[in-house]
Length: 129
Image 1 (cartoon, helix red, strand yellow):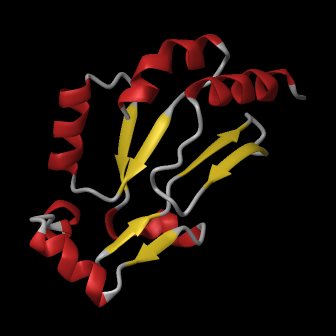
Image 2 (cartoon, rainbow, N blue to C red):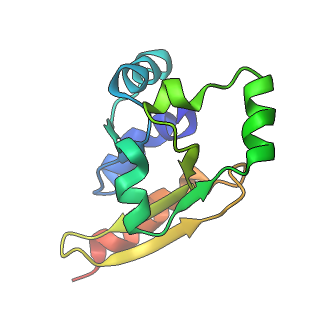
């Protein structure tokens, strides 16, 4: 989120709007917005309803769930349910006609697109008819 916050102005200059979606409860999303001084919308997707429609949900195994609990990570608290699922990180550039012009999805949550790549994709999408 912090990396995206740094390029929000570039995204807007390229003709885009940035919207992030998180399964966290609104109160925790607000804390993230405040902490990182985000200047874009962070929407709540409780229960990963939107992520499920895209087929982008990772279900924790029992072993992984226990490991996270031992580390003090309480997804039930942050997400408001006991599903122990998270969205698979993805980014999408969608033009004004609703056509998806660029995607980046990786099951490895540590792999994220370079913000400049997103800005370039938005600039390209803005020029399409």
